[in-house]
Amino acid sequence: MKKYAFLLGSHPLISFLEILNILSVEKIPHGSIERMAEILIIQLKTTDTKIKKLQEILGGTIKIIEIVDDYRGTIFQLDKILTRENLLANYFSQHSSKINFGISVYTTKSLVYAEINWLRNFAYQLKRRFKDKYSIRYVDEKNFELSSVMVANNKLVETGAEIVIIKQEKSFLVGRTRTVQDFRSYAQRDMEKPSPNPKSGMLPPKLAQMILNLSRDTGQNQVFDPFCGSGIILQEALLVGLEVLGADIEQEAVDDTVENLEWLIKTYNAAAPKLGTEKIKKISIAGKVRVADATRSRWEKANQTNTFIATEPYLGPPQRGPVLIHHAREIATQLETLYLGFFTNLKKNFPKIKRIGIVFPIIKTNEGLLYLNILDKVKDLGYIRRDFLPAEEAKKEALATHRGGLLYSRPDAFVIRELFVFEKR
Ligand SMILES: C[S@@+](CC[C@H](N)C(=O)[O-])C[C@H]1O[C@@H](n2cnc3c(N)ncnc32)[C@H](O)[C@@H]1O
Image (tube, rainbow, N blue to C red; front, side):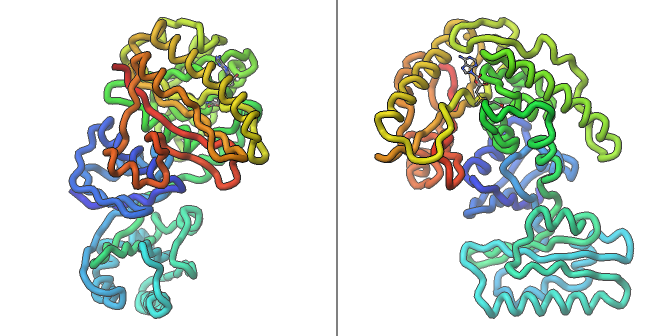
């Protein structure tokens, strides 16, 4: 088994749980797991190809780093570890005489001035040491935290290395970045699709991936989104090879979804040979997305044991400031009716579906946060909230709600997302 470090995104708790569920769904054997604030260190029995695949599907992982060295000591001893021989053999992936390299440090306590100074000197010394045979370039980032964009733009993974130093309690892990999130592809999926629908809310593709990855169980290869909007969740599902089914109460949303999914297949498959990526299965979208009310419709195609739900229903009107409490209560009451109507219909018409990943809204009001108060009723219908973490651990998590949901929000948002996965009893 090799040791890897996963650099987690802006919502590290969701990222962490997403990784755990996917390792289990994909049956990737793993050893010990250690969670730091923004990093997950884990031993995996896997291949480079699978690591690349994991990076593509995990919305919450920014970089995957392969750990090469592990030592006790201080940062000032790094030169004893990162010798020329070690760097050439285990870090730099130079295919020519050109080497581009950078250094990132992840630590729970910020580096002190002397450490930063020493590291910068070390980097420039390295550059001098390799100058004899190589054309070497150091990508200097003053805070020693290279973004995935910098790693990709400077081609560090392909032509050299991003050397990553992880400072633990009493030791250091040193490794090299194997993959980073493909920011260009996310931007394309997000911004270039033919029918974006600002009305149905803009779900970031990375969050759509995380919802899918948290909701799935082993053996489930078909996803149904009964509130599909413009099809963002279904788009991400297609990319990982899942079968997709979608529905929306609005004809316009259904048309948008069909157009966006057809565009995705065409664009990706045209680019695949050049990018060396796998093609998406060519399917006909017609017949897979339809107009239907999630609180009353039935659809045998979706009522299957291999099917799970991943969905973001209507979260209420967008808000530009804290909502007055009496108004927020009116909105919440309407949404509670919609959500309960959906769960009631699920029980009646989709009894074979066992897993439901779903976003609830939390409204920021002038008197604090207002949650949808329907968990007991959902439980009475037979849908049990999945505990992501043991109760004691969950209480300490700033990114989990008091009732075990996972928080996803932007600092300036007035409607916050609360993620749940339910399991049918
Ligand atoms: C937040 S959007 C969904 C965004 C979507 N998850 C995506 O990936 O693009 C909510 C959608 O729910 C739809 N909707 C509202 N009430 C519905 C109902 N009773 N049945 C089905 N769809 C409904 C709306 O038309 C809207 O398109």
